[in-house]
Image (cartoon, rainbow, N blue to C red; front, side, top):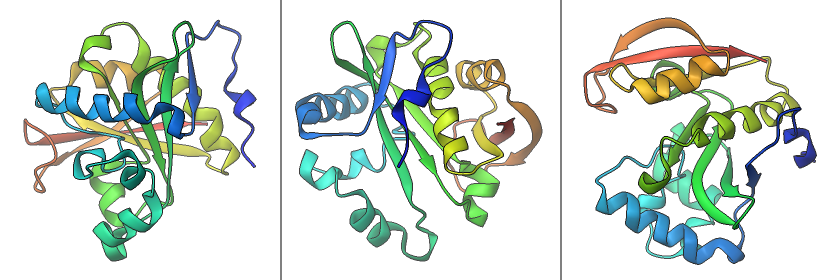
Amino acid sequence: MINMNSCNTNSPAILKLIRPTDEYAEQVMQYKEDMLASNDSFDGCAGLEDVATFSEWINFEERLKQKYGEGYVPSEVFLAVRKEDNKVVGIIDYRHPLTSFLMQYGGNIGYSILPSERRKGYAGEMLRLLLPICREFGEKRVLLTCDQDNEASRKTIINNGGILENEVIDDVGLGKCGIIQRYWINL
């Protein structure tokens, strides 16, 4: 059992990470619409772009096993909810263990922020809140990747202790610039 209180740190948290529930169904589906309208990628959203309803989306394991087949790995999906108004501002997932594809291109953690909620420090806080959860799953370090041109993600990762291991050619077309940076965060 994961202790969600372990997300607390000495700094006051503006966000909380929670498992998706029906209470947030409407917000999650609006999140999808907002991301589509901005032509954004759905990093960390557990295939939200592929579903028509919340009940279809929340069936992560069955749906993602079918989508990825042998490449499927379990993931822990969390909504980043702003405490003051209970608004979903981001989605983050932790994938474990790493497949060869995730080891090369995708990493353990993916996340996204609503376009209207960016530049407020939420990505950094989401990642900071997730790292103790990864530790509770037995991780000693986690891999995060980002497009070489994604300055916001790079800063978020580095500010949470990320150390660049290398850059790889994005020959699978995940990013925009053709180069993926691979960072490790020691837990």
